[in-house]
Amino acid sequence: MYQLEEPKYFYFFIAIAILIVMYMLVALWKLKKQSEFADLTLLHKLSPEKSKFKPIFKIIVVALGLSMLIFALVNPKMGTKLKTIKRQGVDIVFALDVSKSMLAEDIAPNRLEKAKQIISKIVDKLGSDRVGIIIYAGNAYPLLPITTDHGAAKMFLQNANPDMVSSQGTAINEALKLAKTFFDDDTQTNRFLFIISDGEDHEENSSDIAKEILNEGIRTFTIGVGTNKGAPIPIKRNGKFIGYKKDNKDEVVITKLNVETLKGIAENGKGKYVYGNRTSKAIDYVENLLLKADKKEFETKQFSDFKDQFQWFIGFGLLFLIIDVFLLNKKTKWVENLNLFNEKRREL
Image 1 (cartoon, helix red, strand yellow):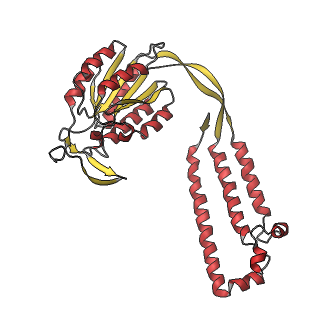
Image 2 (image 1 turned 90 degrees about the vertical axis):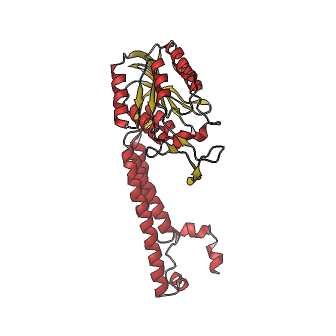
Image 3 (image 1 turned 30 degrees about the horizontal axis):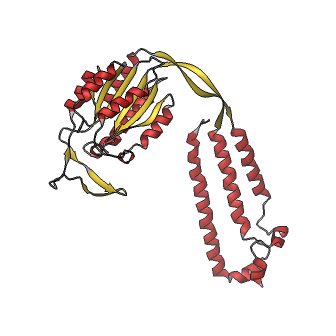
């Protein structure tokens, strides 16, 4: 396991890219000026000791040296031990609707991206709480088992899309049942399930299942994304818009936010419906809810004793830069004698 202490320094790689581009432009400019001055074959005979390969090799060495120093600034750390620690928190599972209706753009950029933003910002507010993610459309699938690794949760979340679910629809009942398996029965933590959806095409007995899982200690909250006015569902291919989804009558389908369904699920799950279009208010409500919740102690395993590794990168970086100092633009005799690129034969 590793950590990056200062990943912001990766931006310095832009400077290396600029350096390489500048070198290429200068090399092309020199070649152009030399061709204007004299025939290149004649110039080569006038300066037989000048190497064509060395300048390229030198810029590669410099780039490698600077890259190593950037990695030293980032300071990768390696975890050397896996230990069990005790933490206090609650368990939170997000059930994210990834059905096609969530691609409607009645809220910017679309409902699905808004839902991801809400979940991501809630995760940023969490302390020692554990989090899991379910995605559902025609079926429900576990995207991320419950974990304390909030960084992994956000990474998996960004990849969630309708193509990850084999069939379309809104299998909220399946997602509710799947949520029951996410929580650790040996650790009786406070359990929260947040369903983020537009509420469209949800099954009729969803409220009853929400009441059932309440017996397992799971409170269900719903967060609605979308508008009452609704919007068509765009169809895109390779990122290009090709039209809107149509029904059997060849009419454009308009998908709307179904507040009543989401409210019913929340009420039966002893939770609350939250309007998600106002992102800050939705996040504030969830944050206050979790702050007031009783924190239970649980055990988790994580890597510890992270050791700095920057010294290795400094060493290699300085080595490459020292090599560059001793590299001259002249040909190296023993390398020339090897004739690796069959240059002598071409000259004959």
